[in-house]
Every structure is written in C-alpha cells, then in structure tokens.
Length: 199
Image 1 (tube, rainbow, N blue to C red):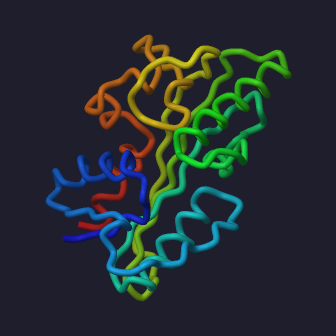
Image 2 (tube, rainbow, N blue to C red):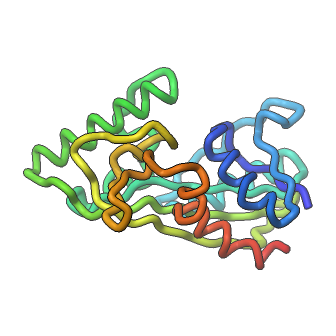
C-alpha cells in the first residue's frame, strides 16, 4: 500500500515512514508529487477538523490515498494554547528553525507572565486518511503527556520538543532518541490506532 503524507516536514515524514514502514506501507511526502498543489486552508477549530480538510483536499488534488495530521502543543496553564496555532504561534520567522525558536520563546514568555512554571502539557496529533475521491476512511488521535520546562533541552526533534519534559524518564522530548520518541509520541500513538483501520 502507498500513502501520500500531506507534509513537507522531513522530521514528520521520517517518523511516519519509520512506523508505517514496519507494516509494509510506503509513505511519500508532498515533495514527491509531480506538481505544485495549493495548500488547503486550515480553518477548522480543532486538530481533527484541520486533519480532515488536509487529507480530503490533497487526496482529491493528487488522486492518491492521503494521510494528513494536525498536531500541536496544548498547555493547561495557557488555557490550551498554542493548540491549533502551534506552528504559527509567534507569527514570525522565515525558516522552520526561526519559527520554532520564536514560538518557544513566546510560550515561555506567556507562562512567565502568568507566574506559571512546569505546567502540565501535551502534544496532540489528529490523523485522517482520505481516498482519492476525498472520502474519509479512517481517523485517530494520540497524545504525549509531559510538563513544560523553563529551560530548553535536547537537540532531537523539532518544534516544542526541547520544552516538553517527561518526568518518568527525566528528559525532554528533544533528548529522546528517534526510536524512543517513536515508541511513545503523540503521532506514534495515533498511527498505531489507525493502522488496523487502513490495512
């Protein structure tokens, strides 16, 4: 089985390929499509809603079975922020690295303003798979629990990984190896739930 993953994020693509590859599912990213495709507007108010929009939009545009995810960080002390706006929380930065740095800085600033530290938080991933005609065939969701640390740690992963501390292992998500992260991340939880629905 071949699936188009609706992302140009090499980190996300690698994580999905590592997990689904064990099931004999070949996953390709948007960089392997033959033509430029307009990105669907993500105007839903939930992770699941945005995943549906992307999966159906890219499936119809490419004529391929498509998997899309919408994911982000939910911080209890910030009332669920940054949530669906996680990737563009600060609204600045040209490169992914610049955006990640700005987002992390704003998150820590907003927590500091509220006098909060080590707030419970979680990464959430909603997955959706759509057939070439746009029909939704499977959906799942996963979470990756931790607390926000005030000092970024680790060099692996991307986004808010350096800030999500995992008390049970004494490390941040960015300090986990690829194998360790794939065993417990929000995306891996969602992927393992969706595998029986698409195979």
